[in-house]
Length: 207
Image (cartoon, rainbow, N blue to C red; front, side, top):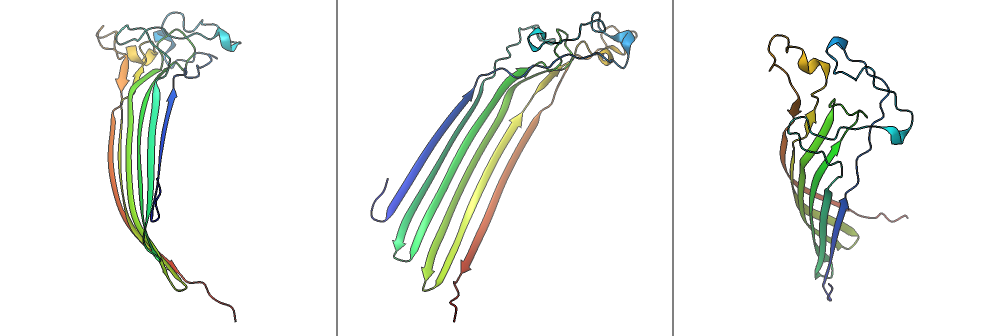
């Protein structure tokens, strides 16, 4: 959009990633406590070809089938407008907004055992930016002044599954129910930033 004094430009962007995460390749099992290793882990064959790699089909915590296809989306928009207040003064507005959603599952150990699968369906990022600036010139003097504001919101809650890790069953000899098969790391971050800026310059003439 443009007129004699106003010019404006809006850009919208959307991307989607539905691919699967890279799978791990099994080399060897070295559990700290071999006596507690899940049956079959110590004798699991070394994978020599990438397409021979194995993976875990079901979640250790719920028993549901694991979908390794990603569902990650990014939406971003930016808008710039310039308005000439006079022959020597311009007001500029810069606006930006982005929203990111992360969803994926990954089996990095290359075996059918539940050793360190990661399932993350709740990664989110939201970011907003706004800036107003005035720019002008007076003779040989050029100057710029403005204000901006940023708000970022980030949250995530990846879950790691490790039912077949030997250390998870360290105390089962005392209590059959004393085992660990999953953990969840929750993160929530809120940041707001305010800033003011300005500057000027004047070209020097030789002689």
